[in-house]
Image (cartoon, rainbow, N blue to C red; front, side, top):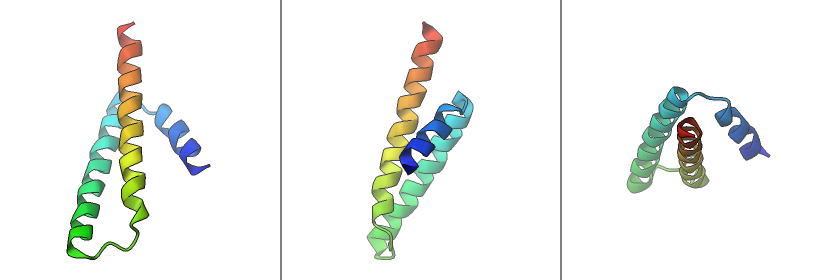
Length: 70
């Protein structure tokens, strides 16, 4: 259920907003990897969620650029 809400929110964003969101997610992914390496990560499931969110954003960016070319 949460991913459907997240996807609809992402679809409403412009390409610039998607780029900013991707940057934010990449920073969060880096921080989570760092926490895991130092043994401070408490919510291990968040790593997988962030990875999937990055894929969603990249997919939407690719779809928007393809529709802009057509």
